[in-house]
Length: 315
Image 1 (cartoon, rainbow, N blue to C red):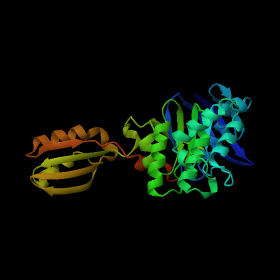
Image 2: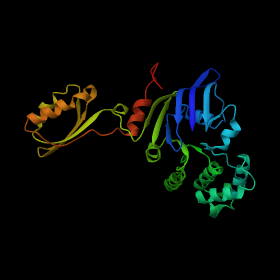
Image 3: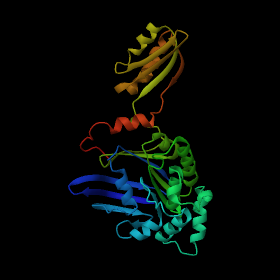
Image 4: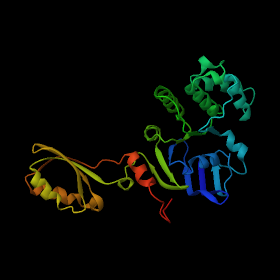
């Protein structure tokens, strides 16, 4: 579906993208994360053929975005952060206009407009002027123009930006209904949206991909290694057992001798927690529960994006 290799983008002497490799399969839902200015929007505009690369090869649905941009645009739907709506146009007229821009045959246009209106729950406002609609409905119109051509690739840049809580829920529900049978890329600062929609997350920092993994996976390297224990025993016995892990630090200990909750940051000693279990078993401490939680996406994002990018960091 998407294949990008050795992509670089300069604006003058300023390098804003240095993405060595990126691929996406058909039907995949990918979340793009990064701080402001990381290069997310620039990369999405390259995928839509709105911007050329400085160097590198990018293909969407097998078409070169630089040499076959018209063919690419027939297969792509794009919701930009500031949707290009015409406030003086009627909703259904605007969607007809969007269909013409995307080269949809005239005989198919009425059916495509009706389908977009229905999917985005816009039938009740189809004859209203866009400028008279609430921001939530305007966002629905913007999504409708993005899907008017039944795109194989749907790119959504900050789809819930500036909406109130009820409007956000409506737009999220709409996106959930649209995500099937097409590849979707979502860029947002709302990490809960990425966790709700995406199967895979890509974190971009200073124009480079610094993390790319499936949300279904829980690689320990993605976040800080922690261990949670629920123990029955005296505090001195527990503290004595913990000394077998000199690199670990107790970040929380609550409860009493009957049930004491302990949270450990394993530090560099993440591989030695089996020794801790053995040490606890040698004492009078009873292990009621032990678990290694998966890192939260928010924690991973903060850890990876703070501070300067290391020279030579893999992408």
